[in-house]
Amino acid sequence: MSRPFNNHKKLFAAGFVLLMLMAGCAQPSEPTPTSKPADETILRVGVSTSSPPFVFKQSGEIVGLDAELAKEFSQFIGRKHRFVELKWKDQIPALLEKRTDIIMSGMTITKMREMRIAFSSPYYQTGQMAMVRKENQNRFPTGYYGILGQSPSMHFGVVKGTTGEIFVRRYLESARKITAYQTGKEAMKALLTPFMVNRIDAFVHDGPILLMLLAQEQSAELTIVPSLLTEEDLAWGVRKTDPDLLEAANRFIDGLRQNGKLEEMTRRWIPFTK
Image (cartoon, rainbow, N blue to C red):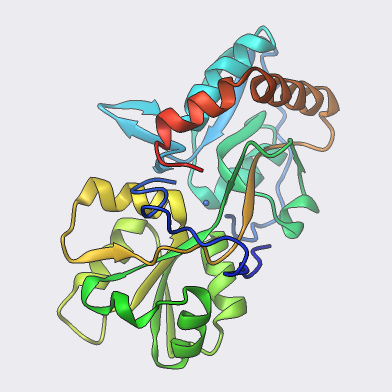
């Protein structure tokens, strides 16, 4: 579960610190097991391609930090990778139904998810941030507490089923209105719409994804409040009944961290990461 970030501990300001870079799950219905046996030579990787810079499409190819890590991990365990594209809300059901073997798509560790699936060691620390119109950026000089204090008069936008939605509904529940969108681009449009009834005041989402969206859209009217609202660990999800794959994932992540390759790969996809 997202938790409020201590502004005195770590502001995300140093040069806007992630400059244009740096996801969460709904409560799905109970899955039904599949009867089709899996090909054990293939690693079926669940991805949602709306999560740049972790997983997204570029010229029709699935790319991003998690996509590259998936290719490396499949080689590490001697299997071929196969990306299985899913909507975000279907990630955990697909895993439990054995339609995928692992979720590698910028998923945040939360207590609710840990009740259903197992998580690897974290490979990246991120958090929620807020996108606002530039004309309003001076309204929030203290990040989380500035937004919290003004929340009763604010209309927030979130992406449905993400930790951003969980955070806003739990910690900013006094908001005037909260609207859940299917994609981040829809929320960005709601920030810019001239129609007040549909216009939101802030879009809360994973920091790296917000910054990447802003870099892609290159809107001169939008900006990011330069501080993290939460601290969250990203990890890969596996079935609790697959301890061998979980152990292999942990060994792989630990090895990459020790030899410095994880940092190198992360900085390539998230250039201004700390």
